[in-house]
Amino acid sequence: MPSQSLNILGVVRNGGTALAESLGCIERLRQELAESRVIIATNDNADDTDRILGDFAAASKGVDVLTMDGLSATCPDRVDRICHARNEVLGRLFATGPLYPMTLILDLDGPNTALNSQAVLGAMSRRVPHWDAVFGNPQPSYYDLYALRCEGWCDEDVWQRIHSESKPLFFRKRWRQNLLQRLIYDRQYHIPTDAPLIPVKSAFAGLGLYRTGSLDGLRYSSKDDDGSPVCEHVLLHRRMRARGARLFIDPGLTTLAPSEHLGGASGAPLPKHLYGESTSIG
Image (cartoon, rainbow, N blue to C red; front, side):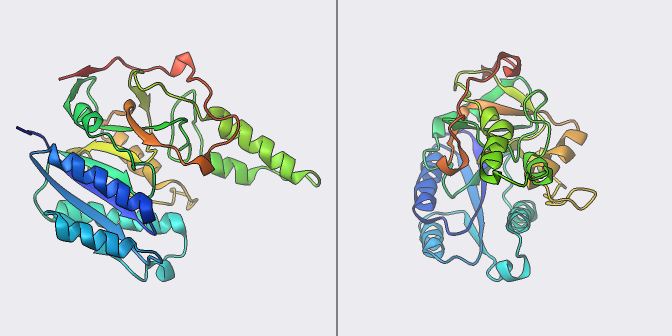
């Protein structure tokens, strides 16, 4: 009989077909769990996302859909909107019961259309090394450098770096292509699914599995201390680490890398110095 319990959280806007496929994966995962609940935030959809979410909530117990229409008008910046939606979902999790020991946070617009239930269950069962959060391994290449902070791999906000670069007077298109290749595509490595856990300061790539207690009292932010825009995951994970949390990429927790975020240089082998800690299940 299933014995594990899980909170499942997500945010989505205009999710379309990918949303329906992702919800199907969530439902299959829930069938493997003893208990679960789902909380999803959405706003201002122009496709059939509202209908898909409504049908899912009507057909499944323990599903809470937070509809925040009008958010696009009051919060025009996309990252700020996502941050607000994530905080609403996180707040609802801790304000209402039941509250299960582990929490799975998913993007529902593409990366999790092939979510592997057994991989999630295996990650939940891991005891060694101790972890407070593990994150997805997108295939074929680790695309999400925006959320990634890892010594020897990506220690900076790559988009702030790109925006701060001085533009040349001529050949700007070629200059930008070279810049993207050097700062992004050359670092979008392929991580084998059987690689050890990779220690990180922050990551996401569409999926994060957290010990629920590690999130208690924390919130996402989309602005750094100096007011500069930053990925909401980076600041949440910084606050977790300040309380002693240990974070890893879990190579077995695969997600799908959106093709539009990859370049011709994406997919180089993961450098040996980034291979992390050996894993143990059970």
